Image (cartoon, rainbow, N blue to C red; front, side):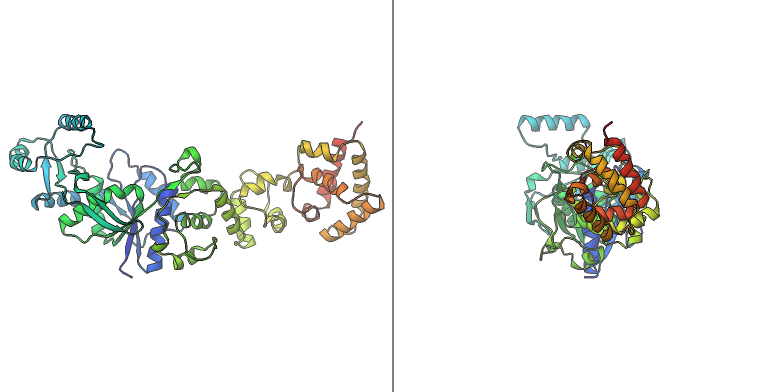
Length: 472
């Protein structure tokens, strides 16, 4: 098992997509569970679309998730000479040929294919003619590409996720290895690098299934051992279409900026299309996942990205932090919220069971840090229907100012005793007080809230609400 070597090989043409991150997680966990090696490769051979700075963004996103390569990161652009050498070797072996077909001729072939109503133009070059003319045309300096002479027997493999998959020979064209400008194509470079890196298992997205027969052809043509292939179904958005920015955040960086914990996103993505196979447990540490992960748990159907579930899971992971770790995390995502460490320490025991995201604290519960500037209109109409409530609150506030203790239990005892002495139910006062302190009709337990806000703040906010709702 220790000979297992897997890789994640993103192209630096965009940010780290959560689908790519999940693929990296599956490979990383498989390597850790099997005692193998997890490697990273940057596939930057596209000179037009590749951007060096995006490679660093991708690597930063992986590091944020706790994923790093067991060996130095491989950059595909360093191996162009190697790729050209393999293409020439395939020509010598008779498995590839120089193709002098012009762009105009290719376009004509496509039109003919369309006229025959074929679903796709599958290029099949005249191999014998190309080889016979190669020396003369090379000497003349004619532009050429290098194409594989594809198998007509078909290709099949036992996919690690989907089971047996077969492509008929007619479905595989004579695909290009080297373009006319000398640059390698994806198929040539990925096979060469996977072979040279000793990759034993290629675990990647379903969108690569059509690439696999071409790559198996190359492995066999070079006499190299073919790795095992597994293709993971794509992640779908809520609309059951491929996850895209139209239906929500898609890059790891966006989730970082929104305040998700890396271990929560890691946990969530690991269960997106994979199951540990027993029970309904969903909260795992990275360390636990390293022990329980297996390829057999990968599901063959697409999973739907549920942001609400991710937020719930983030809350669960917040509660696994120590109090000081949680406070550090909240401060890091407080933005411009006027929260001090001391305030957070005071408020955290009260809010710990309720928080899923930092915004829950700094927006939904902003009253913890600043006096409310407005009050829920429906709540005000219900709990301040006439001029009597402000007067009742004024009397209660005066009595509260002299309360011996501001701990939750004595506060509750004091309020209930005061209400009883005035012939009121406790609820008659609890709801207006909550509205006065928070501006909302829903909050954590009132007496716990009064305790963490403190006597001075509670009295000040009560006075403000009394003045607001008192009728002239």
